[in-house]
Image (cartoon, rainbow, N blue to C red; front, side):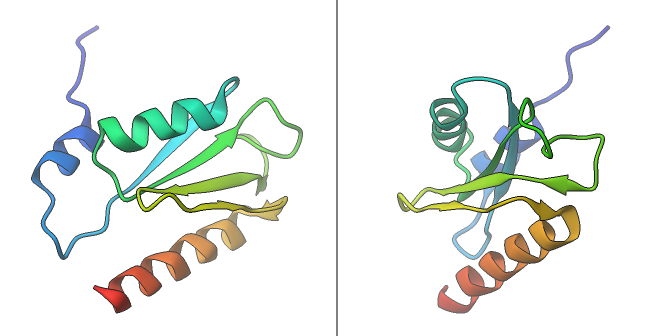
Length: 101
């Protein structure tokens, strides 16, 4: 196996002021700590973190429970939602950020 480039880190290194970078973190422990570390290390604007060990969250179902951490210190905890609804919340946050840029 060959290690691939860290795409999020590469995007974070080269992002322009007009770009908004979202990353994702699937965690099983220390969710907030790991998400905040990734947010800073990758130079992202937002990290969407989910504790994949929680019932209703993760890869196999149609629902998820996420928290969106912002580089501005914001933290938005979303309840159990359909994955489509989570995507809509992320899209709304992106649209608000781009509207204020």
